[in-house]
Length: 232
Image (cartoon, rainbow, N blue to C red):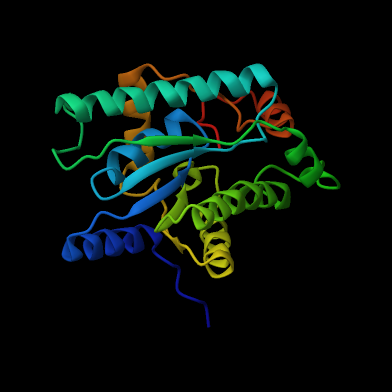
């Protein structure tokens, strides 16, 4: 018998209803891969959580590319926080319940990614190397969330149509058990989330790159001659 497909978007909504019913505002450590991917996720979740964006992406190379994506993330968060301070949302899907967003950044160390990728260099994009990369970034997020007492952790990765949402949520559930911090299950691309991220990218003039971030995804993007896609 085929197992029913999980509806991760509905799971997110269930948690948000739970938060509303309790009248609380929990803390969330949100791993972000880039500004375009985080744009919709932040717009959506800042109504319900005190969010700290965790920028940990050792997969991104070269250093100049990492810095460019990092600066775009900081610029977006600054713009969102000005909206909250000024109570002016510019037609965005937010209300006076939106909360300010904090940032936490891990030191940049590309060797962490290359050590993880040893033996997986020839894997196709979207395969085992990518799954290991999800886990690398998500596990550090879970570890930080546990160490600093966050109520929840999650990642923006599932907003990309190129990312495997079931695998992301499978890893998140494992890390929830391992670190004792609740994982917010999600598939942020659903319910027009990916479409909204493109709209917000244009609204804020965000840099949108055509490869995920690592040397292997850049190689594959050049082979495909692909158009713009959000990083991850």
